[in-house]
Amino acid sequence: MRADIAVLSGDGIGPEVTAAAVAVLQAVAHRFRHAFDFAAHDIGGIAIDRHGDPLPPPTLAACRRADAVLLGAVGGPQWSDPNASVRPEQGLLALRKGLGLYANLRPVQPHPATLGAAPIKAHLLSGVDLVVVRELTGGIYFGDKTRTDTGASDLCSYSVAEVERVVRRACALARLRRGHVTSVDKANVLETSRLWREVAARIARDEFPDVTLEHQLVDSMAMHLLSKPRAYDVIVTENMFGDILTDEASMLAGSMGLLPSASLGDGRIGLYEPIHGSAPDIAGRGVANPVGAILSGALLLRHSLGLETEAACVEQAVAATLEAGVFSADLAPNGRAAGTGEVADAVIERIAAVSRVPELRD
Ligand code: IPM
Ligand code: MN
Image 1: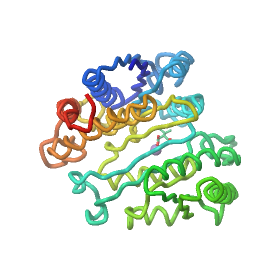
Image 2: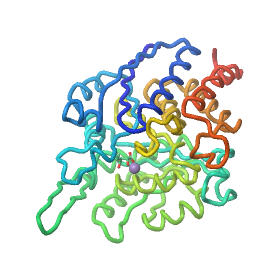
Image 3: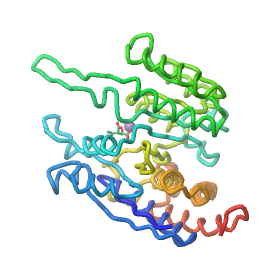
């Protein structure tokens, strides 16, 4: 198949990990005889420097025309002046909103080879396989903001329709997995959470009778995620709770650098990005972990291009790479660490090998 992929590498380690993901997707295209066209566009801090705008209109227009968008990371200390009128992060938020990508899927499946890197006891981690579905275009991130000399406020609001669509997405996903959804809120305090809980319960009861739904308060969820992570299948929650819980969940996998994400709406277009930030402290040194970006490429193949076999091939190649002990510095603090390019090369080498497995078509 032919596909146009917009590449927004952004700031910090973004360009390095994105280059690794593009190299892997090129290897997939070669192996499975597809033609992927990659076109680079500016977003974030680099776009502020070049165009005075963290999401220049040509970037958004190109993303709208593309089949999928691959993104690295945005932000950095040089654009973090609290008095600045524009910030790199605004570009990312505007892109998510502009493309209507309201559901952010963040899968967490610790690999046996990296359990030692996690700060949690290994026996709690084996068999963990969960996906957080984070609402991405509403809530406090997008409410009115005010600032005066004496205070500030951020408004958190959700419409019924915004809750319905993301809960539907989570229940549909659970149906393809173990059939269990945990809806996370703070219904003992917040009105938006009481609405969230009510809507989630109705959608699950009326439209997904085969899916079991439980409700969990966000503070106890933060605790249970560490003490019994195996108990969870699909976790659905609002924008900011999802942001916080997924950084926490990344510790189950051993490093933030390992986790991918897919941001989806009602169409085929999706935005694929690792959940980590721009890590300015290690940028430009070729040491960043590209696995989160590479696995985001796998999600792109699956969700926007419908190439399930190819997606599974990338995931298996990554698993085989970790199994072989090819670790970047975040996973091998004291051992010999592989550079970003070495990890990518190791995955690419295994793309060919994995695709010889009989159940994968030629
Ligand atoms: C994430 C990031 C972003 C968010 C920032 C960069 C705006 O932390 O994707 O999790 O808060 O959504
Ligand atoms: Mn985050």
